[in-house]
Length: 421
Image 1 (cartoon, rainbow, N blue to C red):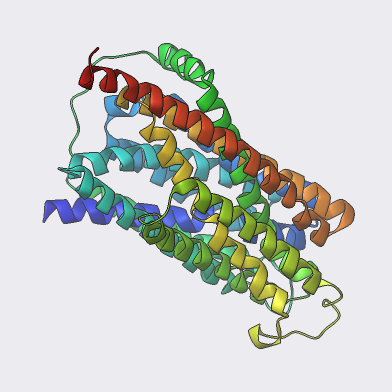
Image 2: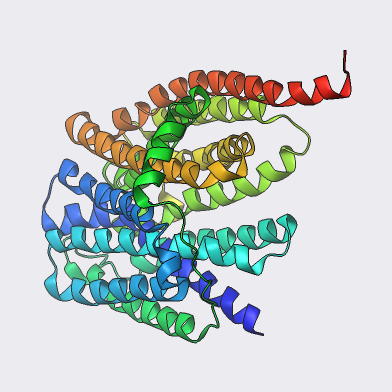
């Protein structure tokens, strides 16, 4: 019973943060409508979210065991509850930035804690993988439902209305409820043993980044997240301004992107049992480029058509989100290959690098897309994704080569011992 209570606590925490974190595309669109800001200004929201996750997760990862995972989660949830409750009354873009900084900070505390708690609850690698997949599946459910929750608070007759901010009263209540569930969950406090300092961990992470395999990996991670966030964060705005969809429909139809990501990751698990990861990811990258090249021309001159619902939406509105099917496997697969190539002791600093460069990639992708969208239009901004897709093909080639070399070196001592001269 206590185990189920703990799982429920971490699951609902992940669910609510999925809604909050992935609302950035919707909030970008509504901030442009309601606060009359430019697209480059709106694009900075991604930075407030991602960079706070990166900085805080790195700084607190070794500190959280000292204060306890439950307390860390409660602090994060309480911070977000207050920020959400204040947002509708302050109703200003500067506070939206503060909100996303609070969300990023809190998620860093929650993510580090949740990953550690999953380890406590798992007695084997299989059990750990099963519970992790369940929690990540609940996260995707939160992403999907978030689009519909926000769309339900938008005034269909007035895009500039601030009524959409009332969604944060509902979210504040949901986070407060989550806080109560975590408070009563019997999450154990692990005895803290003194180890390396923050300074030594940072130096260790920098030393790890000098390895050729790691360098090409973090560049690959950077490029992937740049593509995903560049498209995901701006898809609601693309649907509205390029395809001419009403604001509510623009946000709702973006949920196809979340569904595609979920289906893509589930399908990839089955495919990878029969196929090597490298050719599979190259097929995925080719598919991503093909989706862009086939769907974006269909977005030409459709904004003048009267659209009132999903039934009136042009074909491009349904095709573009399907890029999620192709991109979904890339991030988890290259993470798995990278971590599998390293000894267990280096997984923690490697995870730090993954978080940092994922955040930098997401922020860069959103800002670059926002500037290009503002300067030359949404179609050209989305065509720009073909450049990092091409670069990712190149980095994956060198990543495969470096990982194969490392594996062969690791196996060579074993072969020599099995076949002595």
